[in-house]
Amino acid sequence: MSAAHAPVKSVAELKASEPEYQTAVRKIVRSHAVNELYGAQVYDEPAIALAPNPYLKWLTCRIAMEEYGHHVRFRQLGEQIGIPEEEMTPKGRRPLSIFEFPLRTWEEFCVVKLLADLAEIIQVEDLADCTFLPLRNLAKVTMPEEIFHSQFGKDTCTELIKTADGRSKVQAAIDRYYPMMPAFFGKKDSENNALYRRCGIKQRTNEAMRQDFIGRVKALVEGHLKLKLPAVAEAA
Amino acid sequence: MTGGAAAAGILPAFLAAMDRIAWFSSCAAPLSAAETETASSYVAALGLGSLPVAGVADWRAAQALAQRPDWSRAWWDAESGAEKDLHRRGAQRFGEDDFLAALSRVTEAAASIHDAAEAALARAGLRDEGLAKAAAGAASQACHQAALALLAGAGQSHAFALKFRLFSGGRWPLGIVQERCFVF
Image 1: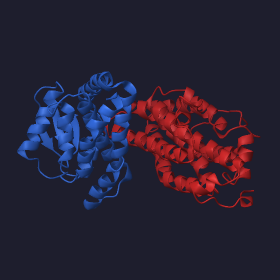
Image 2: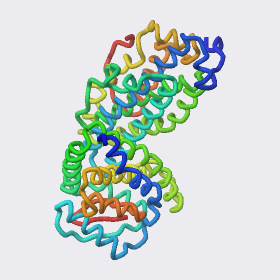
Image 3: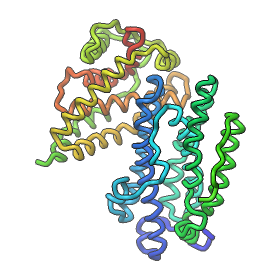
Image 4: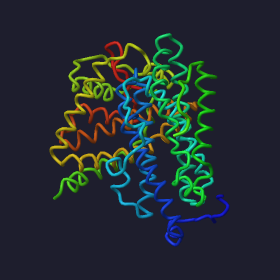
């Protein structure tokens, strides 16, 4: 479907493109700008206080800065394409439902990095072939940091489950956060997703990305960590 | 003058100073008498009394020290308390939104410290993404804290101004472990 739309190489070219394409780009840039900032505020910044030693506190500081930096990059692109600034903060737009479940423990933060950052990677991977090239480039720039954040979640969870107490806490965090993850990918027959694919901004359906995520999480949680995934409704 | 303009007016010299710092360039070198004195003053300014100051031999020793379970919670809590106090004073002075906007500029400027941390590790023959990020996170936190002190009008003898001075000299203060302040 993406082959139907020619690449749009710049913000100037975007302004000359058809209104539907401009709407699609604005929607997705706005969504990333809001959710990157919300994630930093709801998870990464509070996790600094929860981290068990200075090294992990400082590492978490840096992760929070990188997530904030992703917001800044998406916001700057948003400003260039005419999105009002107030629409690119959580005050102006409703964020994802996962952000309504704030952190209580360090183990929860590690699980959020394990699960939510993998979900983010899958979303960003889909932008790697985006027809709007400034957005494609942005996805490529942010990807290495997203991969590190997800690996951080895997490494810290792997360390935590070495004790019975840690294992129990990581499982409890997975039980709390995993059920809301499938909805992260949007509705099965989403009009926004259809628009994105029509414009070649996204390549895959929400359902395809959701199934990809579920498969990769199963490998991580059940295969690598030897923990259990709670049963959840897969379709949003 | 608006709160935003006033806050923004204070920052350029600080941002320029951040830009000139050779981050982590003195790590592992023996501490000078002046650096030891600054570290002692930093601990005292946090209200933690007089503690001995020690250097750290290399990056791996610094990494291990920062992960020891017997680190001082009183040290971290003293810094957190000072941050809250300075935040309240700064927000009163400039207004919450303008104050936060000024701090955001510092955070954005601190993003490049990571490259300096990677370079310092490379000079030591190491490649460790996590350690580079932790070092950059510590330095970025120090920039944020020093900016809090600056915007709140706290002066050069404030603990965060002294901590920033250590970072400015290419050091990484690692905090307090077993009643001893370690500076890498």
